[in-house]
Image 1 (cartoon, rainbow, N blue to C red):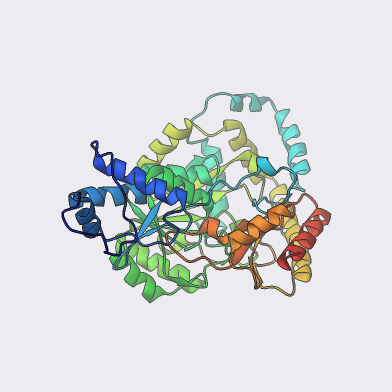
Image 2: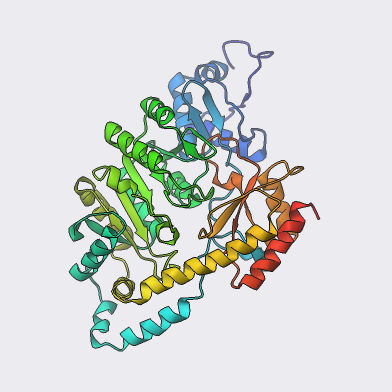
Length: 462
């Protein structure tokens, strides 16, 4: 029984801790998770101060501290300096957004796919190079670092986008999510804090939860960062790193301005943060801007993936790594993958050295422009953010829709898959009434039109 009387004392959470078998903090964490899953505690609810809960349960303060810390690492709670601890706003959403096996009859406007119309050209190219006698060697075990020629090819290509690194500073990964996982495992520890946008890539969120790294929403207004606010924030939040998708941020479509990039570079140097620059959409964007890597090369790990501008099935990504991080990341990638597919690495290498790559990139841009023109016309009465070569859009829901989650469920009943803003929320942010729609997921523009027609009806509640 608690020493003090709390019978009439207002507390947001008064757990009954019957089982006090050591370690007690794990029992209390289990109880907290049960109350969140059952709905007794809701997203955004503020938990009692640690000392107050310790008095109520007649436990040592350190037990409550360990409980809250454990639940933060599991993604159940988020702490705000000077404000308290809250139930995470995305606690009831899933971070796994690829495919929906349960609803195979849905029109897919949720998962982000690139346009696939160039795959036939890639297959023809692959058939030709498979006939070359040296290709048999790429079916064998190879160095996880790839060949000298492969690294040189990537190094030369990256110089075109202002990432100037020698071939020996490039590491290979099986896609950008594989690269992010290696970075979090190799350079961060459970309890470390990474600042990111208030709505961020679901793949980052799922990996962070698995390894116990906490994502902290950065101060922003309509997705835009203010340098002075960001600097003040970084001084108080004990961050170890920052994560950004500079071009076509997923899900909000925002691209960092030059001022924002300079600001991030300045802050990265000032606090010596590890900056994760996920350049997944870089090659689809027409506008050319300097990458974050150019502003803080000693702090930034630049991730360059072929999934969106070439094809996702080849699963290749390249990390441009400052020398001081290379050893730890080399080890993490080796332990995760042993090696990337030598065959995939060589196929991509030969595509990079062929004239077809520029043609494929431009054709994907042209297809995206056509699809976005259709979306802009059919949804002209709504606020739909995103540029004409972005493969997804951020749609602000009109009244009377109360939130994105409500609309997502309604759209699913109508045979349409979209993803609500709540699925991307970080920490305890309040999500806008918004959904992400992928305009390149339907295999043809005709099927996209059918999907947008359904979406327009759903927006009206029909």
